[in-house]
Image (cartoon, rainbow, N blue to C red; front, top):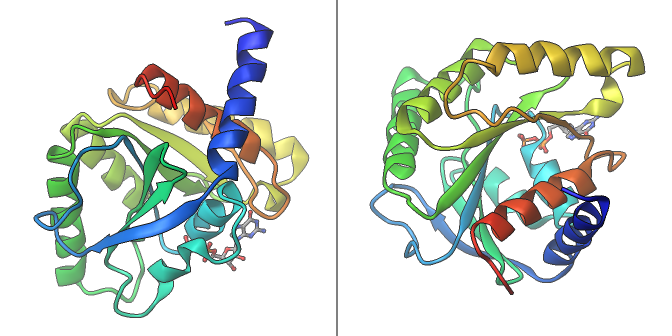
Length: 217
Ligand code: GDP
């Protein structure tokens, strides 16, 4: 791909996220979902990984993803329409220590059903805390995605908390870890919602994905 293509995609990514962003639907079960009539890109991650902050940074909003933090709604799959370009799906956070085994089983069942029955799901971005790298609970989610053959990409978060000299080694160690995973996209981003580092790159990745899916608006 030429530099001009890259520049164009980056500009497209910026534009995609510069327009409207609206909460459209909250779903508590995989049997109650919006019609699968738009490209969807989902975001998953352990509670506290920085998912709400990332959704807000991508969309230049302060509180868009707040709805997912409302007590009682934390188990919802939240659907946002991003400027009519695609639907962003904010999956409920996992791995919260205080959650009962039953709730974990519910989360897994709901997500498994969602992943299996969603042909319009272009990719899942799995957020990993960049300060630690993947944990077992993250690996379990990657197993789920590999089994469901849903394309996913890892995004390391909180880059501003990691020493400059450790950024590259954390990226490489994580890349090596996922190298044999069948549904994992090899390229990993390392973002900071606080400083904005690599947020434009993530927007560009979304633009590339939509272009591949034939989204032309
Ligand atoms: P969620 O539970 O995954 O939605 O996580 P939140 O977005 O609510 O963030 C959890 C905590 O991590 C909050 O205290 C945020 O301020 C913090 N956080 C999120 N993103 C970043 C980041 O890019 N850098 C730093 N240093 N902290 C972050």
